[in-house]
Image 1 (cartoon, rainbow, N blue to C red):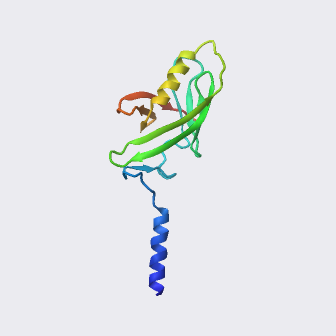
Image 2: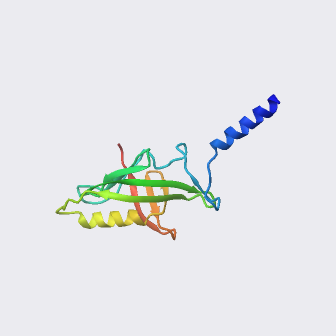
Image 3: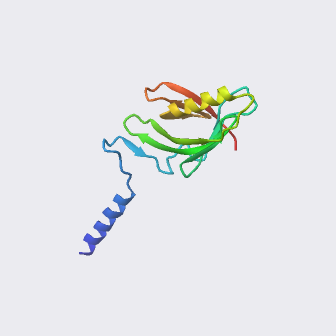
Length: 145
């Protein structure tokens, strides 16, 4: 009887620690030990003085700048276990609405590109985003904090 209780507790404990996949069992949430974006800051290379950047916070939020306006919002990061892609989903963004003398075109392109991103890949100090077809959308460089 004692052995059965230990086995039941062990199985129950292990099942509580596993990650639940989606209904097709191909996409798994990335836990904190596997998160690639959490705690990192990335900037867009541009020739303007105010550089667009985003910082991925541990609580699933982002904050940053479009080069003109501040941005904040939420994101979700998962792993497609069939092809190893890091899936990226951005929630609604909140932006300030200042009008800037320069950089409004960059801001529009930055926000549009970020909104089209559905997956990402990190190579060294480069974060590349891809759309749902697998085409490159844009890339960011790691920013030292």
